[in-house]
Structures are given as structure tokens and as C-alpha cells.
Image (cartoon, rainbow, N blue to C red; front, side):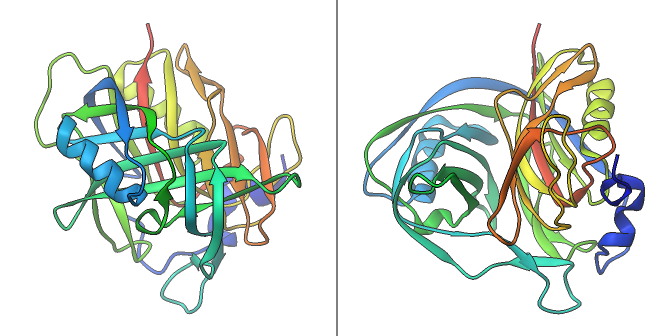
Length: 288
């Protein structure tokens, strides 16, 4: 393992402006109901998801938007900090006239009482590999009616609040009410915590041996079992379909990430070699 990517050394690579807070990860059990989200054309992605949340109800949701077609799509990628009030920041806004997303996950929660969406996506780059970014959901238009796969969550929610450690407005896990028969959980992870190790600790807390993982976030460098490393201390990340826990261990943590030069990296993340940069948000779905 390259020591530059070890969670134990990540504080030497990147420092956030605020003091480190505890706990280092937050977890709330929930009922996760598989649901089809019918997203209407001509609306912004945010408005289309908001309309479905109002129809379906629930405390939060996680959508998978693979194959959705978007137009007038605006997005950003990771960038270095502009001053000492943040450890990282966002790039200028990029625009794509039209794209059909290959992979995309949307975490749905609340901000100032309104539905809010955090979405990372991957799409073809005109026959030259792929592009990836953090979508500006109110500035991306749904091209055609689309039936998205997803889960509506009851008993756990995501709520945006200013995080004093990173000085970013971030999703925080909340538990509006306890639910019987929980089959999943929302997880958020703080900076510098090893991604694989924290997932395994969270599953142990929940008593879950086997699980499917859906989520997104950012990492400080990354080393993969089956691919070359991502060297940047700043990135945006999306978990892919193969992310699984088996018998309490991360059997595979397949993900894709983009760095500030728009280079993408994909592979099965090594244990101890993927410290969180700003945050990571995840739905853990128990599997029998």
C-alpha cells in the first residue's frame, strides 16, 4: 500500500478548518421500500424528484438514475480550496447539452424544509472514455419520462446543516422516529475515516452480515485492488453496483472517482487506502 493514501496519514495530506468532531460516523436504521420514481420530462431533475417525493411520501430516498437522459446539464468537479476556510472546493460550472447517464445515484433529503438532492453521475465523453461530476440538479432538465429505481426511506432522514469541521453545508443523518422491521440504514462518514473499515464497523453496529451498498462522497487519494491509484487528495466518488458486504466484511467496494483534472479512476478500493475527504453518504440495504 502506498502510504500517501493510508487513512492514518491523511491528515498530513489534507486538513479541514474546524476541529474534529465525534462520533466519526452517524447511523440511523430505517425501512427501505423499493419504489419506482416516475420522473417527468421538461422539469429540472430537482423538481421531478421533488414531485415524486410529494406523491410517495417518506422521510428520505435514494434513487439510481442509470440511463436517464438529461439536457442543458450543469455540473461541477472537485477543485482546490480558494482560501483557508475550506480544505477543498468546487470547479467552475461545466455544461453538457445532452447526455444519457451511465451511472448516477441521488441522495434525497431536506434543506431549509424543502426537498434537496445530492447527485454524482457518470456519462460518455463522446467516444473518449467517460466524464463524471456533481450535478447541479436544479440546472439539469429531464429529456424524456423516466422510471427510476430507488428506495423510499422511513425512520431515517438526511438534513443539510453547516458542518463546523469542514465548513461545508452537508447532509446529516437524523432519526425522526423509530421504525419496526428496519431493513437498512443511512450512514454518513466524517473526514479521514477509512471507507471500507467504517462500513464494516457500521454493519457490526447494525448486526448486518450481508448488505448492498449505494452511496456517494469524496476521498483523499485511493488505491485499488485491480487498477492504478487515484493520486489526488480531492475527488468526487460514486459507488457502483458491485459494492457488497458479506459476512460482515466488504467483499467488494467497487467505485469510480473523478479528480480536479477530470481524470476518472475505477476499481475495488483497498482496505485502509480510501480515507474520506469531506463526507460520504450511503444507504446500507440488508440482504438475507
